[in-house]
Amino acid sequence: MKKEQRIKKNKEFSLVFNKGTSVANRQFVIYALAKEEQNQFRLGLSVSKKVGNAVTRNRVKRMIRTFFQTYKERLHTEYDFVVIARKPVATMEYAEVEASLLHVLRKGRYLKKHKKQQFKND
Image (tube, rainbow, N blue to C red; front, side, top):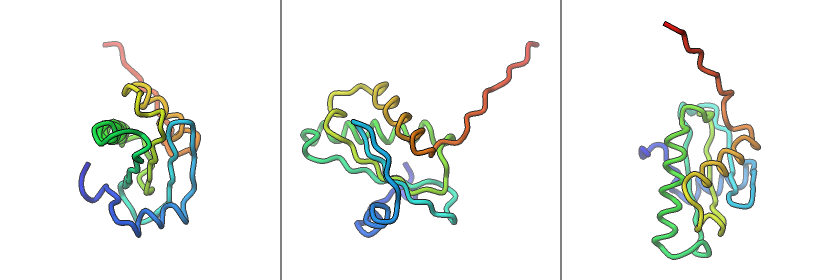
């Protein structure tokens, strides 16, 4: 992800936690804060030591970043997202992480309406 798409500073995390809304399932908690002036979403990640050792935590963060990179076209751009991974994520494969994040984002209505593609028969 590009630098301007990351939330790094403690002050920015705190702002999203305090003023944003949260949606959760068993694997993830997503805090989102609407920012009208933004033209692309920003992402902050939090993976606790409870999830596992450094290798496991980095693997989880890579999977989350990959998901957001893959689905960037479907996400509303005017949000700051902070994703908190819970313990069950440590043992999940990417397909399960993807399904779980989609579930939470749908629950919070952070995904744009998906247009079905029309194919022409030539």
